[in-house]
View 1 (cartoon, rainbow, N blue to C red):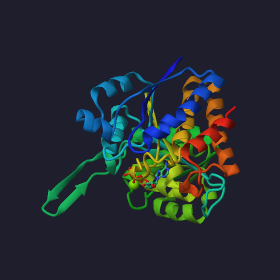
View 2: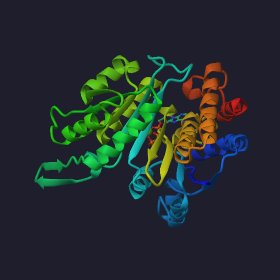
View 3: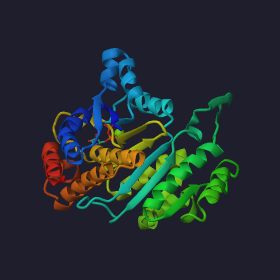
View 4: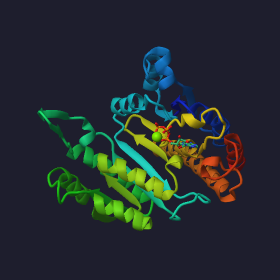
Amino acid sequence: MTFNVAVIPGDGIGPEIYEGSKKILSKLKEIYKLDVNFIEVEAGDSALSKYGEALPKHSLNVIEKSDMILKGPVGESAMDVVVKLRQMYDMYANIRPAKSLPNVQSKYKNVDILIVRENTEDLYKGFEFMASDGVAVGLKVITEFASKRIINVALSYALKRRGKITCVHKANVMRVTDGLFARICRELLKDKVIFEEMYVDAAAANLVKDPSKFDVIVTTNVYGDILSDEASQIAGSLGLAPSANIGDKKSMFEPVHGAAFDIAGKGIANPTAFLLSISMMFNRMYEISMDSKYLLASKSLENSIIKVYEKGEKLTPDIGGNAKMIEMIDEIYKFIS
Ligand code: ATP
Ligand code: MG
């Protein structure tokens, strides 16, 4: 099978990072004989000013026919692009690894946490209204269906990692909604992994106290949103974090950072989050095809990035180095084998 990937280079530093990353993609494709086509599509602020739509029809046509989406950071119109695509293709699992990189200043070493966040419901469903003058109401929706499928995603990752899952909720207060999520966690996970439950406030505290206690965290939409930013920051920097939005039909891979217009065009953007997102994308291709070449490509890219951080010579200014983006990319390129 061939994987078709729609690439949204995005805004700000997005296009230069994608342009610079192309040589890495070509090298991986060649070494591992990957059956992958990359097709560039316009979306985001630049598309909005050109066509009046952040996600124009001709881009959607390409995305519709693609298996995956590789997305750079999008500026002001991010929500019109990301949220729309997540909903259109029911990309229900948001996967955020938080992993330390060598030579990046942080309080903790060896952080390696995977946050699996439900992406479709909870308070983010958007069921909000004014009940009366001065009284705003938002509905929290938790379904058995969505809970089961996200918990199963967490399970499949945990079994490939250290086999531990922390189910984060607040069922002591929200007995019905979080109570449902917690019950399904227990039913699906108890005998299969090292299972623990933690209230979200305790989880926020424990992440700061001792992140090494966590392996996989599975949680509902709002808690996951907050805890995943916390975990990336604990691992070093939000700016280095990749992410995946996984659905049954389509998945989207994107850096967590934004368009960073302040440094766009200066050639000093850090390509790490985008490249790690590509590594996650190859890993997903492996999960779908079970063809080990995709797993090898994913690992090769991740390891090459880690080696450049270990060496610590070609790092961009945001992490205390003085290299240009392209020098860092060239160094990663050299390590790929
Ligand atoms: P958004 O509005 O989408 O949040 P942003 O421009 O504020 O976008 P953030 O990701 O929030 O971008 O980043 C805040 C700052 O961190 C940026 O202004 C930039 O200076 C820096 N930054 C973010 N990503 C990178 C990167 N990949 N390389 C270097 N610096 C970055
Ligand atoms: Mg910002």
